[in-house]
Image (cartoon, rainbow over all chains, first blue to last red; front, side, top):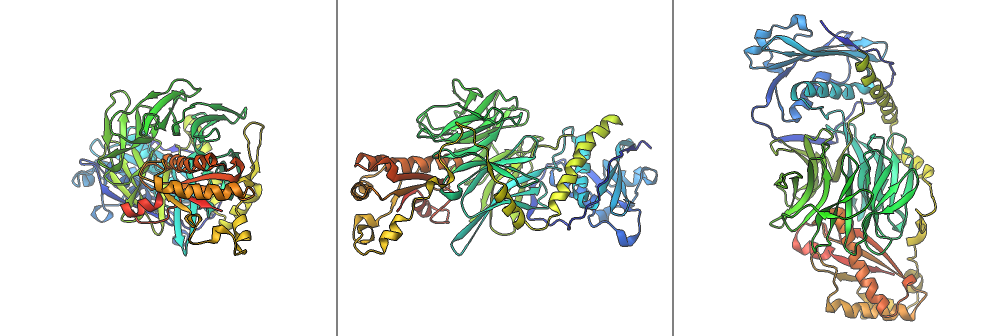
Length: 432
Length: 185
Protein backbone atom coordinates (compact mmCIF):
# COMPACT_ATOMS: atom_id res chain seq x y z
CA UNK A 1 0.00 0.00 0.00
CA UNK A 2 1.71 3.19 -1.04
CA UNK A 3 -0.39 5.97 0.35
CA UNK A 4 1.24 9.31 0.12
CA UNK A 5 0.44 10.91 3.40
CA UNK A 6 0.07 14.60 3.41
CA UNK A 7 0.43 16.55 6.54
CA UNK A 8 -1.22 19.88 6.40
CA UNK A 9 -2.37 22.55 8.75
CA UNK A 10 -6.02 22.19 9.28
CA UNK A 11 -8.32 25.10 9.42
CA UNK A 12 -11.75 24.53 10.79
CA UNK A 13 -14.30 26.47 8.92
CA UNK A 14 -17.95 26.16 8.24
CA UNK A 15 -19.91 27.24 5.27
CA UNK A 16 -23.41 26.51 4.01
CA UNK A 17 -23.84 23.73 1.49
CA UNK A 18 -23.07 25.00 -1.96
CA UNK A 19 -25.83 25.32 -4.55
CA UNK A 20 -25.51 25.19 -8.25
CA UNK A 21 -26.40 28.35 -10.08
CA UNK A 22 -25.32 27.22 -13.50
CA UNK A 23 -26.58 23.82 -14.50
CA UNK A 24 -24.23 22.01 -16.80
CA UNK A 25 -25.42 19.44 -19.25
CA UNK A 26 -23.30 17.38 -21.62
CA UNK A 27 -24.83 17.59 -25.04
CA UNK A 28 -22.17 15.49 -26.78
CA UNK A 29 -19.44 13.25 -25.43
CA UNK A 30 -16.47 11.52 -26.93
CA UNK A 31 -16.91 8.18 -28.62
CA UNK A 32 -14.70 5.67 -26.95
CA UNK A 33 -14.59 7.61 -23.69
CA UNK A 34 -12.60 5.86 -20.98
CA UNK A 35 -14.80 3.57 -18.84
CA UNK A 36 -14.24 4.33 -15.17
CA UNK A 37 -16.00 3.42 -11.92
CA UNK A 38 -15.94 5.76 -8.94
CA UNK A 39 -17.15 3.68 -6.00
CA UNK A 40 -18.95 5.68 -3.26
CA UNK A 41 -16.35 6.59 -0.65
CA UNK A 42 -16.99 4.81 2.62
CA UNK A 43 -17.70 7.01 5.66
CA UNK A 44 -15.57 5.84 8.57
CA UNK A 45 -17.18 7.93 11.30
CA UNK A 46 -20.43 8.08 13.21
CA UNK A 47 -23.61 8.48 11.18
CA UNK A 48 -24.67 11.75 12.81
CA UNK A 49 -21.50 13.47 11.56
CA UNK A 50 -21.73 12.34 7.93
CA UNK A 51 -20.15 14.95 5.64
CA UNK A 52 -22.71 17.03 3.81
CA UNK A 53 -21.05 16.58 0.43
CA UNK A 54 -20.83 13.27 -1.41
CA UNK A 55 -17.18 13.51 -2.45
CA UNK A 56 -17.17 10.55 -4.81
CA UNK A 57 -20.33 11.81 -6.55
CA UNK A 58 -18.60 15.15 -7.21
CA UNK A 59 -15.55 13.34 -8.61
CA UNK A 60 -17.75 11.15 -10.79
CA UNK A 61 -19.71 14.17 -12.09
CA UNK A 62 -16.48 16.03 -12.93
CA UNK A 63 -15.06 13.10 -14.87
CA UNK A 64 -18.36 12.57 -16.68
CA UNK A 65 -18.75 16.25 -17.53
CA UNK A 66 -15.32 16.33 -19.19
CA UNK A 67 -16.73 14.02 -21.85
CA UNK A 68 -13.51 11.98 -21.69
CA UNK A 69 -14.90 9.36 -19.31
CA UNK A 70 -17.80 6.98 -19.31
CA UNK A 71 -18.71 6.62 -15.65
CA UNK A 72 -20.36 3.47 -14.33
CA UNK A 73 -23.72 4.12 -12.60
CA UNK A 74 -23.63 3.17 -8.92
CA UNK A 75 -26.51 0.74 -9.35
CA UNK A 76 -24.48 -1.30 -11.80
CA UNK A 77 -21.66 -1.89 -9.33
CA UNK A 78 -21.38 -5.49 -8.10
CA UNK A 79 -19.42 -4.50 -5.02
CA UNK A 80 -18.54 -1.32 -3.13
CA UNK A 81 -14.93 -1.75 -2.03
CA UNK A 82 -13.37 1.12 -0.08
CA UNK A 83 -9.69 0.19 -0.29
CA UNK A 84 -7.30 -1.78 -2.47
CA UNK A 85 -7.40 -4.95 -0.41
CA UNK A 86 -11.18 -5.20 -0.85
CA UNK A 87 -11.05 -4.94 -4.65
CA UNK A 88 -11.84 -8.02 -6.74
CA UNK A 89 -10.57 -6.92 -10.15
CA UNK A 90 -12.59 -9.56 -12.00
CA UNK A 91 -15.83 -7.95 -10.76
CA UNK A 92 -14.85 -4.83 -12.65
CA UNK A 93 -13.36 -6.52 -15.71
CA UNK A 94 -16.73 -8.19 -16.48
CA UNK A 95 -18.35 -4.75 -16.45
CA UNK A 96 -15.81 -3.44 -18.95
CA UNK A 97 -14.45 -0.93 -16.43
CA UNK A 98 -10.84 -0.04 -17.19
CA UNK A 99 -10.12 2.20 -14.23
CA UNK A 100 -11.43 2.10 -10.71
CA UNK A 101 -11.47 4.71 -7.95
CA UNK A 102 -12.09 3.64 -4.37
CA UNK A 103 -11.83 5.66 -1.19
CA UNK A 104 -12.77 6.48 2.35
CA UNK A 105 -13.71 9.59 4.27
CA UNK A 106 -12.61 9.74 7.90
CA UNK A 107 -13.40 12.30 10.55
CA UNK A 108 -10.41 14.35 11.60
CA UNK A 109 -10.86 16.53 14.65
CA UNK A 110 -14.25 18.07 15.27
CA UNK A 111 -14.95 19.46 11.81
CA UNK A 112 -12.18 18.09 9.62
CA UNK A 113 -11.95 15.08 7.35
CA UNK A 114 -9.29 12.92 5.79
CA UNK A 115 -10.07 11.63 2.34
CA UNK A 116 -8.11 8.63 1.09
CA UNK A 117 -8.44 7.39 -2.43
CA UNK A 118 -6.75 4.97 -4.78
CA UNK A 119 -6.91 4.77 -8.57
CA UNK A 120 -6.44 1.31 -10.13
CA UNK A 121 -5.79 -0.02 -13.60
CA UNK A 122 -8.36 -2.83 -13.58
CA UNK A 123 -6.79 -4.99 -16.29
CA UNK A 124 -3.32 -4.97 -14.82
CA UNK A 125 -4.64 -5.05 -11.28
CA UNK A 126 -2.26 -2.24 -10.35
CA UNK A 127 -2.57 0.95 -8.36
CA UNK A 128 -1.80 4.00 -10.50
CA UNK A 129 -1.92 6.58 -7.75
CA UNK A 130 -3.19 7.09 -4.22
CA UNK A 131 -3.46 10.05 -1.87
CA UNK A 132 -4.56 10.87 1.62
CA UNK A 133 -5.80 14.43 1.83
CA UNK A 134 -6.91 16.30 4.95
CA UNK A 135 -9.69 18.80 4.37
CA UNK A 136 -12.49 20.66 6.10
CA UNK A 137 -16.25 20.67 5.75
CA UNK A 138 -16.17 23.93 3.82
CA UNK A 139 -13.55 22.66 1.41
CA UNK A 140 -15.00 19.26 0.59
CA UNK A 141 -16.16 20.26 -2.86
CA UNK A 142 -12.84 21.83 -3.78
CA UNK A 143 -10.97 18.79 -2.48
CA UNK A 144 -13.21 16.54 -4.57
CA UNK A 145 -12.40 18.66 -7.66
CA UNK A 146 -8.70 18.36 -6.79
CA UNK A 147 -9.01 14.58 -6.68
CA UNK A 148 -10.78 14.62 -10.06
CA UNK A 149 -7.87 16.74 -11.37
CA UNK A 150 -5.36 14.14 -10.14
CA UNK A 151 -7.30 11.28 -11.74
CA UNK A 152 -7.68 13.21 -14.99
CA UNK A 153 -3.99 14.04 -15.15
CA UNK A 154 -2.99 10.44 -14.40
CA UNK A 155 -5.21 9.00 -17.13
CA UNK A 156 -5.34 11.72 -19.80
CA UNK A 157 -1.83 13.09 -19.41
CA UNK A 158 -2.68 16.78 -18.98
CA UNK A 159 -3.73 18.51 -15.76
CA UNK A 160 -7.44 18.58 -15.04
CA UNK A 161 -9.22 21.91 -14.76
CA UNK A 162 -11.98 20.90 -12.35
CA UNK A 163 -10.67 22.82 -9.33
CA UNK A 164 -10.90 26.09 -11.26
CA UNK A 165 -13.49 28.83 -11.36
CA UNK A 166 -15.31 30.76 -14.02
CA UNK A 167 -16.11 34.48 -13.85
CA UNK A 168 -19.08 35.74 -15.85
CA UNK A 169 -21.50 38.63 -16.19
CA UNK A 170 -25.19 38.21 -15.48
CA UNK A 171 -27.94 40.64 -16.25
CA UNK A 172 -31.56 40.76 -15.28
CA UNK A 173 -34.09 43.37 -16.36
CA UNK A 174 -37.06 44.05 -14.15
CA UNK A 175 -39.44 46.97 -14.55
CA UNK A 176 -37.08 48.83 -16.85
CA UNK A 177 -34.10 48.49 -14.53
CA UNK A 178 -31.24 46.28 -15.54
CA UNK A 179 -28.97 44.85 -12.89
CA UNK A 180 -25.58 43.72 -14.07
CA UNK A 181 -23.48 41.49 -11.82
CA UNK A 182 -19.97 40.12 -12.05
CA UNK A 183 -19.99 36.65 -10.53
CA UNK A 184 -17.62 33.81 -9.90
CA UNK A 185 -18.59 30.14 -9.64
CA UNK A 186 -16.73 26.85 -9.46
CA UNK A 187 -16.13 25.32 -12.88
CA UNK A 188 -19.01 22.90 -12.19
CA UNK A 189 -21.41 25.82 -11.66
CA UNK A 190 -21.60 25.49 -7.86
CA UNK A 191 -20.87 28.08 -5.17
CA UNK A 192 -21.65 31.24 -7.16
CA UNK A 193 -20.65 34.52 -5.55
CA UNK A 194 -21.38 38.03 -6.75
CA UNK A 195 -18.31 40.24 -6.56
CA UNK A 196 -19.70 43.36 -8.28
CA UNK A 197 -23.31 44.42 -8.55
CA UNK A 198 -24.17 47.38 -10.73
CA UNK A 199 -27.02 49.19 -12.42
CA UNK A 200 -24.78 50.39 -15.27
CA UNK A 201 -22.93 48.40 -17.95
CA UNK A 202 -20.00 46.36 -16.75
CA UNK A 203 -17.88 44.25 -19.10
CA UNK A 204 -14.74 42.37 -20.04
CA UNK A 205 -13.69 40.62 -16.82
CA UNK A 206 -10.10 39.31 -16.90
CA UNK A 207 -8.37 37.13 -14.26
CA UNK A 208 -4.89 37.99 -13.09
CA UNK A 209 -2.43 35.13 -13.73
CA UNK A 210 -2.43 34.23 -10.02
CA UNK A 211 -6.24 34.05 -9.97
CA UNK A 212 -6.49 36.50 -7.08
CA UNK A 213 -7.64 39.63 -8.95
CA UNK A 214 -10.07 40.45 -11.69
CA UNK A 215 -9.83 43.49 -13.95
CA UNK A 216 -12.95 44.76 -15.67
CA UNK A 217 -14.45 47.81 -17.34
CA UNK A 218 -17.34 49.64 -15.73
CA UNK A 219 -19.32 52.71 -16.78
CA UNK A 220 -20.04 53.99 -13.29
CA UNK A 221 -20.95 57.67 -13.00
CA UNK A 222 -21.34 58.09 -16.71
CA UNK A 223 -17.85 57.29 -17.91
CA UNK A 224 -15.80 54.17 -18.53
CA UNK A 225 -12.96 53.14 -16.29
CA UNK A 226 -10.85 50.04 -15.78
CA UNK A 227 -10.96 48.62 -12.28
CA UNK A 228 -8.92 45.93 -10.57
CA UNK A 229 -10.65 44.08 -7.79
CA UNK A 230 -9.18 41.62 -5.32
CA UNK A 231 -11.36 38.53 -5.55
CA UNK A 232 -11.07 37.47 -1.91
CA UNK A 233 -11.28 40.86 -0.19
CA UNK A 234 -13.58 42.82 -2.51
CA UNK A 235 -11.15 45.73 -2.37
CA UNK A 236 -10.73 47.50 -5.67
CA UNK A 237 -8.98 50.37 -7.35
CA UNK A 238 -9.65 52.35 -10.47
CA UNK A 239 -6.71 51.94 -12.80
CA UNK A 240 -7.62 54.28 -15.63
CA UNK A 241 -10.14 57.06 -16.09
CA UNK A 242 -9.27 58.65 -19.39
CA UNK A 243 -11.72 60.42 -21.62
CA UNK A 244 -13.65 57.97 -23.80
CA UNK A 245 -13.29 54.20 -23.80
CA UNK A 246 -11.27 52.55 -21.03
CA UNK A 247 -11.84 48.88 -21.60
CA UNK A 248 -10.73 45.38 -22.66
CA UNK A 249 -8.14 44.85 -19.89
CA UNK A 250 -5.76 41.91 -20.40
CA UNK A 251 -3.08 40.85 -17.90
CA UNK A 252 0.43 40.10 -19.06
CA UNK A 253 1.53 36.54 -18.18
CA UNK A 254 3.79 37.90 -15.40
CA UNK A 255 0.88 39.88 -13.95
CA UNK A 256 2.79 43.18 -14.01
CA UNK A 257 1.20 44.83 -17.00
CA UNK A 258 -2.27 45.42 -18.27
CA UNK A 259 -2.95 45.74 -21.98
CA UNK A 260 -6.10 47.76 -22.66
CA UNK A 261 -8.13 49.78 -25.12
CA UNK A 262 -8.24 53.55 -24.65
CA UNK A 263 -9.82 56.09 -26.97
CA UNK A 264 -8.36 59.13 -25.21
CA UNK A 265 -6.62 60.25 -28.42
CA UNK A 266 -9.84 60.22 -30.44
CA UNK A 267 -10.34 56.58 -31.39
CA UNK A 268 -9.71 53.18 -29.79
CA UNK A 269 -6.05 52.12 -29.67
CA UNK A 270 -4.11 49.48 -27.73
CA UNK A 271 -1.98 50.56 -24.77
CA UNK A 272 0.08 48.68 -22.20
CA UNK A 273 0.01 50.00 -18.66
CA UNK A 274 2.93 48.93 -16.46
CA UNK A 275 1.51 48.59 -12.97
CA UNK A 276 4.94 48.78 -11.34
CA UNK A 277 6.23 51.93 -13.02
CA UNK A 278 2.68 53.26 -13.66
CA UNK A 279 3.72 54.17 -17.20
CA UNK A 280 1.42 53.89 -20.16
CA UNK A 281 2.90 52.81 -23.48
CA UNK A 282 0.98 53.22 -26.73
CA UNK A 283 1.12 50.04 -28.81
CA UNK A 284 -1.03 50.97 -31.79
CA UNK A 285 -1.79 54.35 -33.30
CA UNK A 286 -4.27 54.03 -36.09
CA UNK A 287 -7.47 55.83 -37.01
CA UNK A 288 -9.25 52.46 -37.15
CA UNK A 289 -10.82 50.69 -34.17
CA UNK A 290 -8.07 48.69 -32.44
CA UNK A 291 -9.33 46.70 -29.48
CA UNK A 292 -9.49 43.34 -27.64
CA UNK A 293 -5.79 42.87 -26.88
CA UNK A 294 -4.63 39.49 -25.62
CA UNK A 295 -1.10 38.37 -24.63
CA UNK A 296 0.82 35.44 -26.02
CA UNK A 297 1.75 33.03 -23.18
CA UNK A 298 5.44 34.05 -23.50
CA UNK A 299 4.46 37.71 -23.11
CA UNK A 300 6.25 38.74 -26.31
CA UNK A 301 3.22 39.49 -28.48
CA UNK A 302 -0.26 40.88 -28.34
CA UNK A 303 -3.02 39.92 -30.70
CA UNK A 304 -5.84 42.41 -31.19
CA UNK A 305 -8.86 43.18 -33.35
CA UNK A 306 -8.60 45.98 -35.90
CA UNK A 307 -10.79 47.16 -38.76
CA UNK A 308 -7.88 49.00 -40.41
CA UNK A 309 -8.40 46.82 -43.47
CA UNK A 310 -12.10 47.71 -43.65
CA UNK A 311 -13.53 44.84 -41.61
CA UNK A 312 -12.42 43.53 -38.22
CA UNK A 313 -9.50 41.09 -38.44
CA UNK A 314 -6.89 39.81 -36.02
CA UNK A 315 -3.43 41.40 -35.98
CA UNK A 316 -0.30 40.61 -33.98
CA UNK A 317 2.15 43.16 -32.63
CA UNK A 318 5.22 42.89 -30.35
CA UNK A 319 4.07 43.63 -26.79
CA UNK A 320 6.48 46.58 -26.52
CA UNK A 321 5.08 48.05 -29.74
CA UNK A 322 6.11 47.86 -33.39
CA UNK A 323 4.72 46.76 -36.68
CA UNK A 324 1.37 44.99 -36.62
CA UNK A 325 0.91 42.04 -38.95
CA UNK A 326 -2.37 40.54 -39.98
CA UNK A 327 -3.04 37.02 -38.70
CA UNK A 328 -6.50 36.10 -40.04
CA UNK A 329 -7.40 35.93 -43.73
CA UNK A 330 -10.35 33.57 -43.84
CA UNK A 331 -13.85 35.15 -43.47
CA UNK A 332 -14.71 38.85 -43.48
CA UNK A 333 -15.11 39.22 -39.70
CA UNK A 334 -12.70 37.87 -37.11
CA UNK A 335 -12.49 39.35 -33.62
CA UNK A 336 -11.65 38.85 -29.95
CA UNK A 337 -8.80 36.41 -30.31
CA UNK A 338 -6.96 34.88 -27.37
CA UNK A 339 -4.15 32.34 -27.16
CA UNK A 340 -4.36 28.73 -25.99
CA UNK A 341 -2.17 28.05 -22.92
CA UNK A 342 0.52 26.43 -25.13
CA UNK A 343 0.46 29.41 -27.52
CA UNK A 344 -0.22 27.28 -30.59
CA UNK A 345 -3.86 28.17 -31.17
CA UNK A 346 -6.03 31.25 -31.13
CA UNK A 347 -9.69 31.07 -30.30
CA UNK A 348 -11.77 33.85 -31.84
CA UNK A 349 -15.18 34.90 -33.09
CA UNK A 350 -15.65 34.53 -36.83
CA UNK A 351 -18.58 35.40 -39.10
CA UNK A 352 -19.62 32.73 -41.53
CA UNK A 353 -22.76 33.10 -43.67
CA UNK A 354 -23.96 35.89 -41.38
CA UNK A 355 -23.49 33.76 -38.25
CA UNK A 356 -21.07 34.59 -35.48
CA UNK A 357 -19.27 31.47 -34.30
CA UNK A 358 -16.35 30.35 -32.19
CA UNK A 359 -13.35 29.08 -34.12
CA UNK A 360 -9.79 27.98 -33.42
CA UNK A 361 -6.93 29.06 -35.65
CA UNK A 362 -3.81 26.90 -35.75
CA UNK A 363 -1.05 29.52 -35.90
CA UNK A 364 1.51 27.21 -37.54
CA UNK A 365 -0.68 25.93 -40.36
CA UNK A 366 -3.10 28.86 -40.64
CA UNK A 367 -6.01 26.41 -40.64
CA UNK A 368 -9.18 27.70 -39.00
CA UNK A 369 -11.79 25.32 -37.62
CA UNK A 370 -15.26 26.53 -36.61
CA UNK A 371 -16.33 24.82 -33.38
CA UNK A 372 -19.68 26.29 -32.37
CA UNK A 373 -23.07 26.10 -34.06
CA UNK A 374 -24.98 29.16 -32.86
CA UNK A 375 -25.86 32.36 -34.69
CA UNK A 376 -24.57 34.83 -32.11
CA UNK A 377 -21.74 33.11 -30.29
CA UNK A 378 -19.13 35.26 -28.59
CA UNK A 379 -16.52 35.68 -25.84
CA UNK A 380 -14.51 32.43 -26.17
CA UNK A 381 -12.13 31.60 -23.30
CA UNK A 382 -9.75 28.65 -23.03
CA UNK A 383 -9.78 26.37 -20.00
CA UNK A 384 -6.39 26.73 -18.32
CA UNK A 385 -5.42 23.20 -19.39
CA UNK A 386 -6.32 24.00 -22.99
CA UNK A 387 -8.90 21.21 -23.22
CA UNK A 388 -12.14 23.18 -23.55
CA UNK A 389 -13.33 26.59 -24.71
CA UNK A 390 -16.18 28.24 -22.82
CA UNK A 391 -18.24 30.88 -24.67
CA UNK A 392 -21.56 32.72 -24.68
CA UNK A 393 -24.40 31.70 -26.96
CA UNK A 394 -28.17 32.18 -27.31
CA UNK A 395 -30.89 29.73 -26.37
CA UNK A 396 -33.99 31.40 -27.80
CA UNK A 397 -33.82 34.97 -26.51
CA UNK A 398 -31.76 34.06 -23.48
CA UNK A 399 -28.02 34.29 -23.25
CA UNK A 400 -26.45 31.12 -21.91
CA UNK A 401 -22.96 29.68 -21.76
CA UNK A 402 -21.64 26.69 -23.63
CA UNK A 403 -18.34 24.85 -23.73
CA UNK A 404 -16.77 22.83 -26.50
CA UNK A 405 -13.61 20.75 -26.53
CA UNK A 406 -10.84 22.04 -28.78
CA UNK A 407 -11.37 19.05 -31.11
CA UNK A 408 -15.11 19.82 -31.22
CA UNK A 409 -16.08 16.39 -29.89
CA UNK A 410 -17.36 17.28 -26.42
CA UNK A 411 -20.12 19.85 -25.95
CA UNK A 412 -21.70 21.25 -22.80
CA UNK A 413 -24.45 23.75 -22.16
CA UNK A 414 -24.42 25.89 -19.00
CA UNK A 415 -27.68 27.64 -18.22
CA UNK A 416 -28.45 30.14 -15.51
CA UNK A 417 -31.65 29.54 -13.60
CA UNK A 418 -32.91 33.00 -14.48
CA UNK A 419 -31.67 35.99 -16.41
CA UNK A 420 -28.87 36.22 -18.92
CA UNK A 421 -25.30 35.11 -18.51
CA UNK A 422 -22.43 36.18 -20.75
CA UNK A 423 -18.69 36.89 -21.02
CA UNK A 424 -17.40 33.76 -19.30
CA UNK A 425 -13.70 33.68 -18.42
CA UNK A 426 -12.01 30.64 -17.04
CA UNK A 427 -9.66 31.17 -14.09
CA UNK A 428 -6.01 30.13 -14.24
CA UNK A 429 -5.02 26.80 -12.70
CA UNK A 430 -4.26 27.11 -9.03
CA UNK A 431 -0.52 27.24 -8.63
CA UNK A 432 0.81 24.06 -7.05
CA UNK B 1 6.98 13.18 -0.42
CA UNK B 2 8.53 16.58 -0.05
CA UNK B 3 7.57 17.67 -3.51
CA UNK B 4 4.00 16.59 -2.99
CA UNK B 5 3.92 18.52 0.23
CA UNK B 6 5.10 21.71 -1.40
CA UNK B 7 2.50 21.24 -4.06
CA UNK B 8 -0.33 21.12 -1.61
CA UNK B 9 0.55 23.73 0.97
CA UNK B 10 -0.12 26.84 -1.13
CA UNK B 11 -3.29 25.28 -2.38
CA UNK B 12 -4.51 24.73 1.11
CA UNK B 13 -3.73 28.29 1.99
CA UNK B 14 -5.84 29.34 -0.96
CA UNK B 15 -8.60 27.13 0.24
CA UNK B 16 -8.46 28.60 3.69
CA UNK B 17 -8.75 32.09 2.37
CA UNK B 18 -11.42 30.96 0.00
CA UNK B 19 -13.38 29.35 2.79
CA UNK B 20 -13.14 32.46 4.88
CA UNK B 21 -14.43 34.46 1.99
CA UNK B 22 -17.37 32.34 1.11
CA UNK B 23 -18.51 31.87 4.67
CA UNK B 24 -19.59 35.48 4.93
CA UNK B 25 -23.19 35.11 3.94
CA UNK B 26 -24.31 38.29 2.23
CA UNK B 27 -22.74 40.20 -0.55
CA UNK B 28 -24.29 43.47 0.35
CA UNK B 29 -21.87 44.34 3.06
CA UNK B 30 -19.01 43.39 0.82
CA UNK B 31 -20.32 45.59 -1.91
CA UNK B 32 -20.42 48.53 0.37
CA UNK B 33 -17.02 47.63 1.63
CA UNK B 34 -15.78 47.56 -1.90
CA UNK B 35 -17.18 51.00 -2.53
CA UNK B 36 -15.68 52.45 0.57
CA UNK B 37 -12.26 51.00 0.02
CA UNK B 38 -12.18 51.92 -3.61
CA UNK B 39 -9.11 53.99 -4.12
CA UNK B 40 -7.52 55.86 -6.89
CA UNK B 41 -3.85 55.17 -7.10
CA UNK B 42 -3.37 58.12 -9.33
CA UNK B 43 0.09 58.52 -10.68
CA UNK B 44 0.58 61.50 -12.90
CA UNK B 45 0.09 60.60 -16.51
CA UNK B 46 -2.34 57.77 -15.98
CA UNK B 47 -5.20 60.03 -15.07
CA UNK B 48 -7.19 62.50 -16.92
CA UNK B 49 -10.54 63.75 -15.86
CA UNK B 50 -12.41 62.75 -12.78
CA UNK B 51 -15.26 60.42 -12.12
CA UNK B 52 -17.75 63.22 -12.27
CA UNK B 53 -16.62 64.32 -15.70
CA UNK B 54 -19.58 62.78 -17.45
CA UNK B 55 -22.30 64.11 -15.18
CA UNK B 56 -23.56 67.25 -16.85
CA UNK B 57 -27.11 66.32 -17.66
CA UNK B 58 -29.31 68.63 -15.66
CA UNK B 59 -29.82 71.61 -18.00
CA UNK B 60 -32.84 70.23 -19.83
CA UNK B 61 -34.94 69.38 -16.83
CA UNK B 62 -34.29 72.73 -15.20
CA UNK B 63 -35.03 74.62 -18.36
CA UNK B 64 -37.87 72.22 -19.15
CA UNK B 65 -40.15 73.77 -16.57
CA UNK B 66 -40.16 76.89 -18.71
CA UNK B 67 -42.62 76.44 -21.57
CA UNK B 68 -40.73 78.48 -24.11
CA UNK B 69 -37.78 76.13 -24.52
CA UNK B 70 -37.50 74.88 -28.11
CA UNK B 71 -36.29 71.55 -26.76
CA UNK B 72 -39.85 70.97 -25.55
CA UNK B 73 -41.54 71.68 -28.85
CA UNK B 74 -42.79 68.32 -30.14
CA UNK B 75 -42.97 69.68 -33.71
CA UNK B 76 -39.37 70.83 -33.77
CA UNK B 77 -36.59 68.75 -35.27
CA UNK B 78 -35.06 69.03 -31.80
CA UNK B 79 -37.73 66.61 -30.62
CA UNK B 80 -35.89 63.88 -32.51
CA UNK B 81 -33.18 62.73 -30.14
CA UNK B 82 -32.32 59.33 -31.61
CA UNK B 83 -30.36 58.89 -34.82
CA UNK B 84 -30.19 55.45 -36.44
CA UNK B 85 -27.34 53.85 -38.36
CA UNK B 86 -26.79 51.11 -40.93
CA UNK B 87 -25.27 47.77 -39.97
CA UNK B 88 -21.56 48.05 -39.18
CA UNK B 89 -21.57 51.70 -40.27
CA UNK B 90 -20.93 54.96 -38.49
CA UNK B 91 -21.64 57.25 -41.44
CA UNK B 92 -24.57 59.64 -41.14
CA UNK B 93 -27.39 59.57 -43.69
CA UNK B 94 -28.94 62.68 -45.28
CA UNK B 95 -32.15 62.48 -43.20
CA UNK B 96 -30.12 62.59 -40.00
CA UNK B 97 -28.06 65.57 -41.16
CA UNK B 98 -31.03 67.89 -41.02
CA UNK B 99 -31.80 66.82 -37.47
CA UNK B 100 -28.20 67.23 -36.40
CA UNK B 101 -28.13 70.70 -37.98
CA UNK B 102 -31.17 71.72 -35.91
CA UNK B 103 -29.48 70.51 -32.72
CA UNK B 104 -26.28 72.29 -33.74
CA UNK B 105 -28.14 75.58 -34.22
CA UNK B 106 -29.78 75.24 -30.84
CA UNK B 107 -26.52 74.38 -29.08
CA UNK B 108 -24.52 77.08 -30.88
CA UNK B 109 -27.03 79.72 -29.78
CA UNK B 110 -27.21 78.32 -26.25
CA UNK B 111 -23.53 77.88 -25.34
CA UNK B 112 -24.36 77.13 -21.70
CA UNK B 113 -26.29 74.01 -22.75
CA UNK B 114 -24.44 70.74 -23.18
CA UNK B 115 -25.46 67.48 -24.79
CA UNK B 116 -24.39 63.92 -24.15
CA UNK B 117 -24.04 61.70 -27.21
CA UNK B 118 -24.59 58.06 -26.30
CA UNK B 119 -23.42 55.67 -29.03
CA UNK B 120 -24.87 52.18 -29.33
CA UNK B 121 -24.48 49.09 -31.49
CA UNK B 122 -26.58 46.02 -32.13
CA UNK B 123 -25.64 42.72 -30.51
CA UNK B 124 -23.96 41.18 -33.55
CA UNK B 125 -20.21 40.95 -33.30
CA UNK B 126 -17.97 41.17 -30.26
CA UNK B 127 -18.71 43.43 -27.30
CA UNK B 128 -15.50 45.40 -27.27
CA UNK B 129 -15.56 45.98 -31.02
CA UNK B 130 -19.14 47.17 -30.65
CA UNK B 131 -18.06 49.54 -27.89
CA UNK B 132 -15.65 51.04 -30.44
CA UNK B 133 -18.36 51.14 -33.09
CA UNK B 134 -20.78 52.94 -30.76
CA UNK B 135 -18.11 55.52 -30.07
CA UNK B 136 -17.44 56.01 -33.81
CA UNK B 137 -21.13 56.72 -34.31
CA UNK B 138 -21.27 59.22 -31.47
CA UNK B 139 -18.06 60.87 -32.73
CA UNK B 140 -19.53 61.17 -36.22
CA UNK B 141 -22.43 63.15 -34.73
CA UNK B 142 -20.01 65.19 -32.64
CA UNK B 143 -17.95 66.15 -35.71
CA UNK B 144 -21.06 67.40 -37.51
CA UNK B 145 -22.21 69.39 -34.49
CA UNK B 146 -18.79 71.01 -34.20
CA UNK B 147 -18.69 71.76 -37.93
CA UNK B 148 -21.93 73.72 -37.34
CA UNK B 149 -20.39 75.79 -34.61
CA UNK B 150 -20.97 73.84 -31.39
CA UNK B 151 -18.11 74.14 -28.93
CA UNK B 152 -16.14 71.05 -27.88
CA UNK B 153 -16.96 71.61 -24.21
CA UNK B 154 -20.70 71.43 -24.92
CA UNK B 155 -20.44 67.81 -26.04
CA UNK B 156 -19.83 64.68 -24.01
CA UNK B 157 -19.42 61.39 -25.83
CA UNK B 158 -19.95 57.98 -24.28
CA UNK B 159 -20.34 54.63 -25.97
CA UNK B 160 -22.37 51.82 -24.49
CA UNK B 161 -21.68 49.43 -27.37
CA UNK B 162 -24.25 46.65 -27.25
CA UNK B 163 -24.63 46.86 -23.46
CA UNK B 164 -27.81 48.98 -23.43
CA UNK B 165 -30.11 47.73 -26.18
CA UNK B 166 -33.30 49.70 -26.87
CA UNK B 167 -35.01 46.51 -27.98
CA UNK B 168 -34.28 43.10 -26.51
CA UNK B 169 -35.38 40.87 -29.39
CA UNK B 170 -32.80 39.34 -31.64
CA UNK B 171 -34.08 40.09 -35.12
CA UNK B 172 -33.40 42.64 -37.87
CA UNK B 173 -36.09 45.05 -36.70
CA UNK B 174 -34.73 45.09 -33.19
CA UNK B 175 -31.11 45.43 -34.32
CA UNK B 176 -32.07 48.45 -36.45
CA UNK B 177 -33.49 50.12 -33.32
CA UNK B 178 -30.32 49.37 -31.38
CA UNK B 179 -27.82 50.89 -33.87
CA UNK B 180 -28.21 54.44 -32.69
CA UNK B 181 -26.88 57.59 -31.13
CA UNK B 182 -29.03 59.19 -28.45
CA UNK B 183 -28.78 62.91 -27.78
CA UNK B 184 -29.30 63.49 -24.09
CA UNK B 185 -29.74 67.07 -22.88
